[in-house]
Amino acid sequence: MMLSEAGVELSPGMGITPVVDIQNVRKYYGAGETEVRALDGVSLSVNPGEYVAIMGPSGSGKSTLMNIIGCLDTPTAGTYALDGLEVADLDERQLAIVRNRRIGFVFQSFNLIPRTSAQTQVEMPLAYQGVKKLERREKALLALEAVGLSDRAHHQPNELSGGQQQRVAIARALVSRPSLLLADEPTGALDTKSTQDIMGLLERVNSAGRTIIVITHEHEVAQHASRIVTMRDGKIISDEMNTA
Image 1 (cartoon, rainbow, N blue to C red):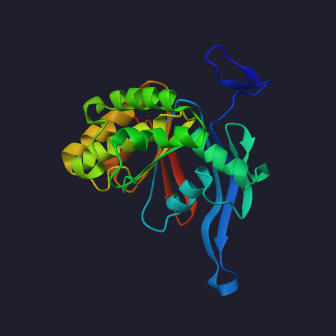
Image 2: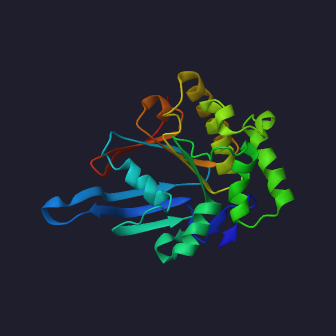
Image 3: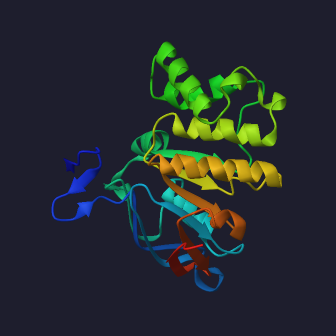
């Protein structure tokens, strides 16, 4: 691989390497009459710096696709490359490293640890990477500052609002400077004001160059993305730039 001046991987003769490159992915559960085709021939490419919303009703396949993009599940057939790495070629240890270093996860339920400070929550991905304590602290505090919570570093989840808890989760997802921020219904547990704040924060994160994929069933959330992918019955039925 070659590197551009911006540090983005380039493939000779192919231009920029996609952060996500999924080709003809299928995911089946069961067999025979009970077979469920959760994904049925899905292809999706997401380039560095894109902000993509994947939406669709319950049962459309968007959650299954999220699990595959996040290296939490493997396809029945087809290929998936993350940052140029063929995921099928990785063992469990390598997959764990990829999830920790290349993907930042944000979930609807925040997934914060009770009775643990915001700073410690944000430090955790770095601890798994073996980063030394002082450096972890510095990076965690910078990440909290970036999401507007520098004054809440020592607060525990029960001392924070829902919107503040999600900001901690976003800081934790970003602290390792991952290739991809993958957010699953990130505003599903929030009120209208907190939803607007979080979506505004994600827009700023994307403007700074971070690639974002948001999984959502809400049109209002999807409208913040620059590209909207719609799924139904395990297939992508539309993939359009958002001109709104």
